[in-house]
Image 1 (tube, rainbow, N blue to C red):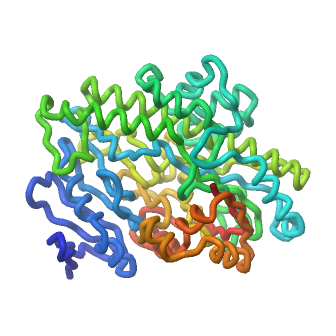
Image 2 (cartoon, rainbow, N blue to C red; image 1 turned 90 degrees about the vertical axis):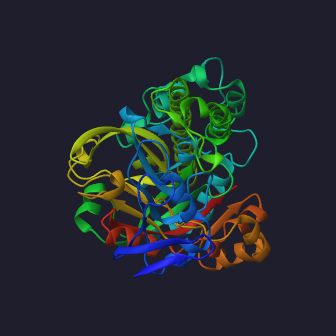
Image 3 (cartoon, rainbow, N blue to C red; image 1 turned 45 degrees about the horizontal axis):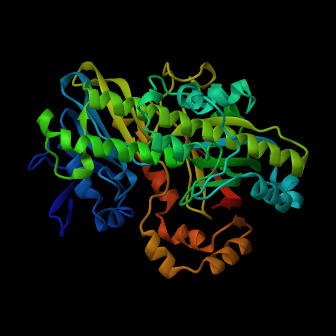
Amino acid sequence: MSSRDRRLNIALVEEGPDRWRIDTHGEMRVPGVVFASRALLPSIVGDRALEQVTNVATLPGIVEASYAMPDVHWGYGFPIGGVAATDVERGGVVSPGGVGFDISCGVRLLISPVTFEELAPRRDLLLDALDRGIPRGLGRGGVWQLKGDELDAILVGGARAAVERGYGRLEDLTRCEAGGAVDDATPDVVSPRARERGSGQVGSLGAGNHFVELQVVDTVFDEAIAETWGLFEGQVCVMIHSGSRGLGHQVCSDHVRTMLPRMAGYGITVPDRQLACAPVRSPDGTAYLGAMSAAANYGRANRQLLTTAIRRAFADALRNDSLDVLYDVSHNLAQLEWHDVEGQRRLLCVHRKGATRALPPRHPSLPPDLRATGQPVLVPGSMGTASWVLAGTTGGAAFHSTCHGAGRTMSRHEARRRVAGSALRAELEAEGIGVRSHSLRALAEEAPSSYKDVDEVVATCARVGLARQVVRLRPVGVIKA
């Protein structure tokens, strides 16, 4: 069977359950592959994400396919929920649009020994403490007020730099992707404007869909893995979703602006200027990857500092700051990785934009205590709906990648037009979800009705083998800008 986006004349051929193909045509070098159930397909066909999937398939050096996760939707250049890898030694490019503006935006899950029954009488006290202790919004303000060369230390050392200065515990780093810092960061290529934007925001939540959320383990799907990871039904957890703030945004803007006029010199043409790119093995490609890695380290330090603020709030409200990091993983990043392609081991630049790495069991990049289970994968839902913890699977497709969230179906402008922030707050409170937000407008923009069904997104990933379900989390309190 097939489906067609009539407006764009892009045909989807059904390859198998929940897997669709866009055959190569025009300038495409590889096919497009879309992971989607029939329930999710209308929202995917309804925006222009499929056009972006085909555009990405034209990039020099791309291998296998231009992939789209079940939460895919329209983004800048690449679709959000897009995965693409280019062959570094065969002219493969890196594209800032394949990472996005919020470099190393990602998720961290903290697990506590506290049960919801124990939390319930003091939940509002805890939400008030989190409200006081977590800087957020578009302006300046952060947990760490930087001095001297401390910004450079963060750009090189990420979460490690934060822990070295007393913000957290050494054991936090063992559960962070790459030990809390990306290698090959080059602070010197981070512009003065990017530095200025980041200097006052480390340890803060951004606006939009960023949040700190109190959650409870609602359902356990894989008891063996859950027990290994220290998860149990009724357990209180805290999910952090934030990234590299204004610094990362500026890095993306700077390097798109640099690459655009230079593509002709590399003999590169792209169907969309938002796909500005440069060969990985070029001065422009090297400069971007160095700046991107520095911004990624800022994002990881940011979540480490938010962890410190959350532990302080738990200590104030519950007299218990025993919160352990289950995992911390980015979903906006380009990484150099070795993968088998057409029977050969190749060095690839893997772009994951709104997609999460899901390393399989026994992968050498995992810490020893996670190698038997595979990587924890953290999938936040929309505000007021479930979130998930998944695990990487053996043989996972798309270079060991999976979804990163629910995926929008409605623009923020449209959400504001349809939803009143005050009514949404009352609705969430009536459902037992405490809300602390500085802006009713921002609350309306993130209404659950503007997102896909995260349970269906996760179920689709499980059915096609991108990840497996471990536990489902339900929200009981949320901190927003």
